[in-house]
Image 1 (spheres, rainbow, N blue to C red):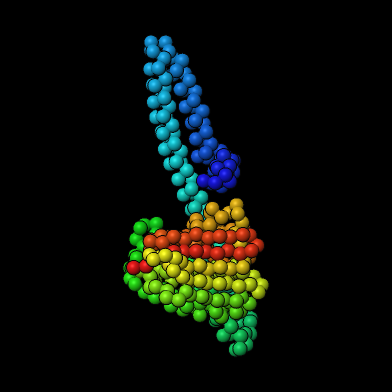
Image 2 (image 1 turned 60 degrees about the horizontal axis):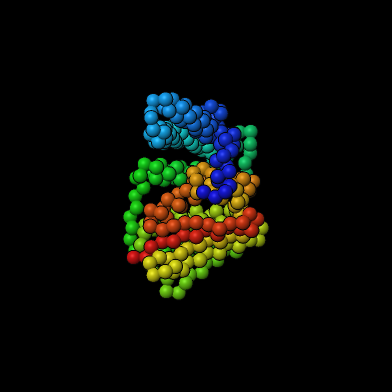
Length: 316
């Protein structure tokens, strides 16, 4: 835990606001109260014990044992409350995000069909195709969100199927780069891919790693504005693993929010200002898939200067 995390944990009011609970329901506040109770109980027991035990050392030992027992008990209870509060917070965030993400495309579809079916609107034939394309895009957006939710559900239940085999990872990345080329060009972004010579095959699940590649490239393009760039690299890290990176020149991630970046439903404040779509599930899914594949994922970022995501994967 770094200094910022430690200070954040000490800020009880901030933690209560984060969980959306009152002070008396806040786990950190309850832990503080229980700590005070333990101290008072230990002092009282020591004062009482000195009247019944001849040896002061015996009193000290008994008080220490009692204090440790009470501390472990209070810590366990507080952690239980913290998990419940976190679950409540995640549930609220889930409802808010899913409601927002589904409401926008549903509203667009509703208005499109109302215009097309209404006798009050005379829609030119040349425009009808444009309206149907809009409907198709919004349906795809909803399907994408539902797919993400299904993957997260399988992860939470420990039922995410992983079928590892040896395959050409560089070719898989190349396919996704070609797929996103049009999207990048439309956004005036230079998309490049460099692969190291003699790049080995990877031992993992290609269908799951495809999701990782899609998420990282999609995020890099969406959070890069103006005439920016997205550079993708794949190379050998050592004899047993490869390294894959996606570097963008986008908005970057604020330092104070970097520790939350792989959490479910989290989106940085500057990312929200970009008004890009997203459920905050993509990076959580990426982290889980990479770790289940036997690799690691991390990032380096500076606000206003861009972000680079790195991932390692084992070689058979």
